[in-house]
Length: 278
Ligand code: KIV
Ligand code: NA
Image (cartoon, rainbow, N blue to C red; front, top):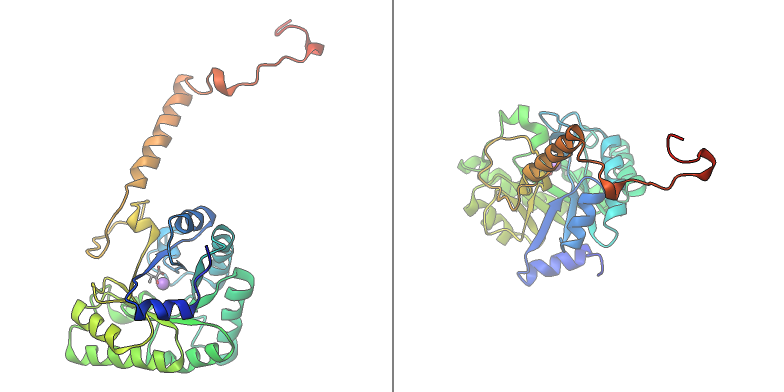
């Protein structure tokens, strides 16, 4: 199969062909997502939460993202890969922003970057796009600003907030973003924003009117993702229990001498030592 392009994605929106996006953070997760037919892989800075065990995405560094993107790129060579720009690696001056995005593309091997923010980030987005770097926007609940937002809550419920989100979405499109993520936004507003833009809008906790959906790998698989109630997540497997049970069985086998068994041992005896225990 062939890797999607940003042109394909815009066409998918026009054709009302929903875009499936899933996060992945390493070789096996990327490989399995590609084999399963995912349209786009996001190397999200959610890796801070689900892979590195931090409380927020704020501690994630550009080195973390480059390292994980490189592994994902090896596992999914036919899939369009977007990688997050971490907290404070953009919006910090034109040159630093461009250099950080360049590392994600050159060293990481991503096809695009994603950054959080609306109108305030429009000039950064325009500069990246001008440099040949496709940019995905991300508005609504923006986890890197969790302390500024006062928690993880649904955005755009008030008229003023809704208007700001619509303006932010239009500013990102205007600046040249090829797509944007809408996170934790009411369904009516997310639908209105999707219908108002030509670029695909990918929702997470943003209802049924978006042009595509994104979820976190560890969340849909119940793969030891830090537990808190996420109404917008659908789980498709309980990999956490599968893994825990398997490891428990291994531990018991070792303790009880049931592993290694006959099948797992090399029993040829070098003649020079004579028969075993002489
Ligand atoms: O980091 C991430 O996984 C994300 C998605 C949830 C949109 O930004
Ligand atoms: Na993110």
